[in-house]
Length: 104
Image 1 (tube, rainbow, N blue to C red):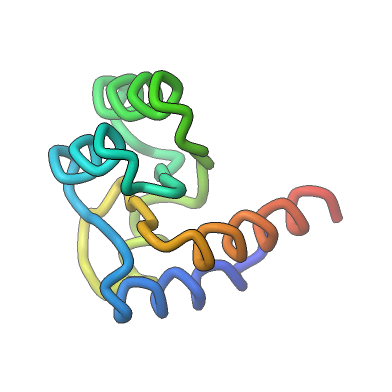
Image 2: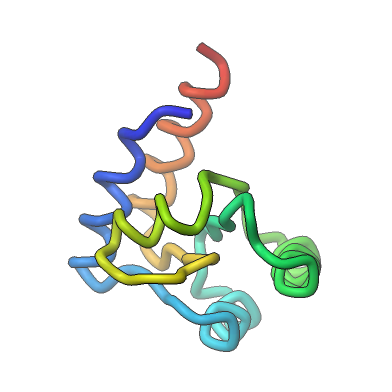
């Protein structure tokens, strides 16, 4: 998986265009504020199901990315398993970078 999206993720976090924490992310999904949700590949089963179900119901794109240490390091916080991107520009660019890394 390409690491380019991690730089953009850090930038989005510093620009305050991200939500952290399961409850806050679910609230932003329900309010349609979240444009994209990134979920760590090593997320616990209950958290994964809760966030996946919410994203599915509210039609918010969800992408499974690297492990929790990798995405936590990108934003300078520890132990983060999910991040909601609130800005459509950041969401579009991160999605395209991840799509490109999966395809080629």
